[in-house]
Amino acid sequence: MLFLSFSAQLTMDMIAMAAPLLALSLSASPFEIGLLATSRGIAYAIFPFFMGRLSDRVDRKPMLASSMSIYAAVAILFNLSKNPIELIALRFFEGLAMSIFWPTIEPLFVKGGRSKVSESLRWFNLSWGLGQIAGPFIGGILITAFGIRSPFQSASLLAIANLALIIGALPAGAPSGDLGRARPDEGALPPSSLIFINVTLGAILSIFFAFFPALGIRAGFSALEVGSLLLLFGIARLAAFHRAPSMKMGLGPRLGLASLGLILISTGDRAAMCLGAITTSAAVSLIYAYSIERMLSAMEDRLGSMAGAFEGSLGVGFMIGPLLAGLFAGGSLSNAFLAASILSAAAIPALRFGKGPEGRAARPCSPNA
Image (cartoon, rainbow, N blue to C red):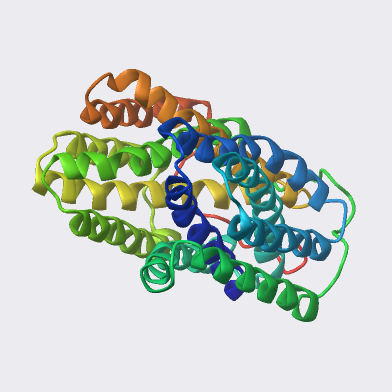
């Protein structure tokens, strides 16, 4: 499953990196390029909630197989597409495939684990995090060497390989019954508060990736330097995921750290932006690790529903974040990061609705959970 998580994220990021460039080569307008992200975002803000609930009721193996089948078909159709409208439609179905995959595989890491939920999810986070770093890098190499459509050809082959892996190596088995049995955890935030935090996290991440490259160029970084900073962002993210299970820092300080990093980026100073990118990366990764661990620890027989709520709430944030930042920014890219900083700081009062110490460590997950 670790390889499947890695390779699926690799596939997704190769497509995400190449789709806007292909649209540009097909004479897409800026509005149409923006719709590429919006189309996938709408799907990812809606479908995970339903797919997570479905994965609690049916065998998860066919669901994972269907997600990779859709990805393979979408990648092939991307390679054959001839106008931006086709790309926009295909991005919606890509969002559907993502909505099936993540809420379905996340419970399998928890159910299959033989240790704490945090330990199981650490390796999950590291696997997809590594794929997120490698995807754009490999996509860029393929485009340079073989042309703009080559990442889609490679992504289709990788999705087909993942499909074969799911069919041949992943055991079948229906989820356990007795839906709705809560796992007692006196110190956990209620899921409603965590969903709000997840929307905030999604908004922060989408603002960062939407505005950081442009702000970096305006601050005097070269395109290569911007790319290197994004690579550093990914490496810092992996380091934070690795350390997250042993971190005793509560959620409030993690949100505050993210707010500080975003303020540093907003200054437009080259040194401050470098420090801010690393700080923001570490903070959002620690928030992500905290939230997914507690969401998947909340209901032991509704893991799919909780995973769907986690991914769907992130999707809502992905969709609304750039819109809110764009409205707040006016003509200043720096203001977009100030908006993100305010969002992060404003989420801290939501922790008051928690039921215990926010930094409480996760309890072990039984092998039969």
